[in-house]
Image 1 (cartoon, rainbow over the protein chains, first blue to last red):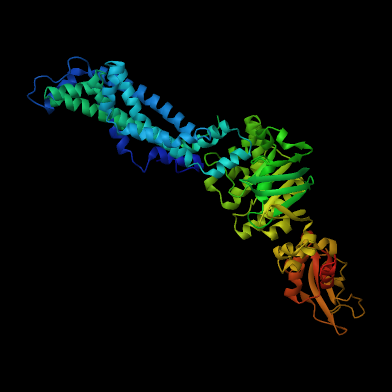
Image 2 (spheres, rainbow over the protein chains, first blue to last red):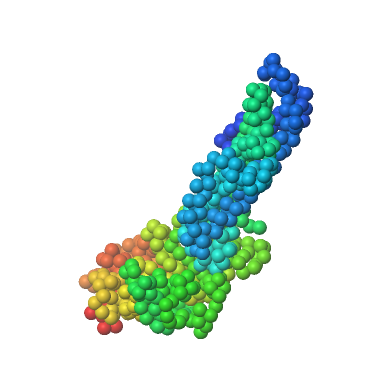
Amino acid sequence: MMGMSSPSQHKLSARERFRVRMIMGSADVVGPVLLVMGVVTLLWLAANPSQLEAVLRMMFPGRRGYLYERASLMTLLGEHLVLVAVSGSAAAVVGISLGVLVTRSVGRDFLGIVRDLSSLAQTFPPVAVLALAVPALGFGFKPAVVALFVYSILPVLNNTISGLEAVPPDIVEASRGMGMTPVQILFFTELPVAARVIIAGVRTSVVINIGTATIGAVVGAGGLGAIIISGLVRDNYALVFTGAVSAAVLAFSADWCFARLEGSFYIARSDR
Amino acid sequence: MIEFEHVVKEYNGVSAVNDISLELPAGKICVFIGPSGCGKTTSLRLINRMIEPSSGTIRLDGTPVSKIRAEELRRGIGYVIQSVGLLPHMSVRENIGIVPRLLGWDKHKRDTRADELLELIGLSPGAYRDKLPHELSGGEAQRVGVARALAADPPVLLMDEPFGAVDPLGREVLQREFLSLNRELKKTVVFVTHDLDEAIRLGDRIVLMRNGKVVQDDIPERILGAPHNEFVREFVGADRALKRLSCFTVESYMHKAVFLDRALLQNGRPPEDMQINGTGMLWIVDAGEVLVGMCRRSGGNWGDVREVRAEELGVSTVNSLRDALSRLLGRGMKAVPVLSDGNRLVGEVRLTDIEAVNQSDGYV
């Protein structure tokens, strides 16, 4: 230990203590290590198809094909991430904006209706949304993004509304009393205080999105769903396994990243 | 100066503030008090346009507040509320810097100012500037709330039951600190409370309200000594005579005391021919005029000289007559010594003075 300064040895400011706790978790380093190992393995196998084939041959002996012929795992991973990133970020932007809008005095009349509509959207199975989107947008990337987008709004919207409504009225009152404009109150007070809850909504939304995006393959949007569906059709569990595990690793990593982001937010300096 | 001119505030036809006209002088602490629902908080919030009046005008140094953009007006008026409302994600220093930041001060100037104010409210900048609000005690949070209101040096301070959520002991400390603070800063303070003792302790002026109207607008000693009507009499309570004593400082009622240097005692007794006054008290001091003992004379004879602890026996010049009376009764004496810095004897207050005060001003 000589010469090393462990974080607990010198006096930490409150903010540092908070941050250390956030990063270290409750001394839980096993999860992150496993996660990093999983991601590294996945990328390595995706980049080295021959190795991937060898691994799959070991796990599922006596099959005819172990690799998806039409696209490499790397391509599929890329497509999947693009699907999630486009639909997820659009859903985050729209969900947060809508949530902000309906909690303002001008938009408060729409609070109920927006909540109902968004819950209603959630009751549609994503496949049904896809089916509805295809006639309008054709096959491919577009209908899948639209379906995922619609599907991802609710958690963000819901958490934005709950987060903003949970901001203590006295600090909004104090902010107003100090001479903040409504926009300043939103950015200096309400959003920073609600940030944690809002990020939690984005986190839920993205994690669900990564799983749901596999269905996009049904309309030819590609992604990890392509390999899963192909495997199911051909009764080839090596393919199903590859797709499912890849999607799971993506989902876990996204969840972990957003959890860190969430944890850092309440103490984020609003000083820009 | 803040002026209310026929100000009315109605909510759905019910008036919360019903035609009040007032002039609140600059540099003074003016306390709005009354039972809940009397319109005191509404009146306060009308000043910085947190709410708008239904009719009437409020002027700040001659300018109608309705003519100033609400946000701009509020940045120029300190505002302290009972729940403090520190922003939980900002450090103490950032919280104090909010209004300066809204006014466009650079970071260096804001931080310097925050440290200066922490010093002023008695919290060490080194220990407190980086704390988050949840790490502060109630009293500390409230002090920071006051510092935040003072950050941009506004001439006017609005305080809505600022010490109401602090325990009674802490509240007295905060009141005392705030009084001495404002003696220096000379802000025009409008203060809302429902605590009469607080109003008497802090107010240069008390505005007693009921059902949206001003019942009596007066200096504290007249609110207590000459209540306008039965409502005021009841509100101030049966112990108003006692409360009224809080309005007067010892300093303005003290007399010369008879004292003797310890070195002049003869065999531990005062000289037989020593002249004293009607209270029969002789104070013994040391060479530095610090009170060290006392001696009573009764029936023409000196009692024993007793050593005393000055701070236990005496009152300070800034104490009120109420404190003095409490000492008098506690000790069964006819006079208490008045001490200045370092327990130097500067005079005495007599029971007869206190009786005289209570009979003055037509008080019955």
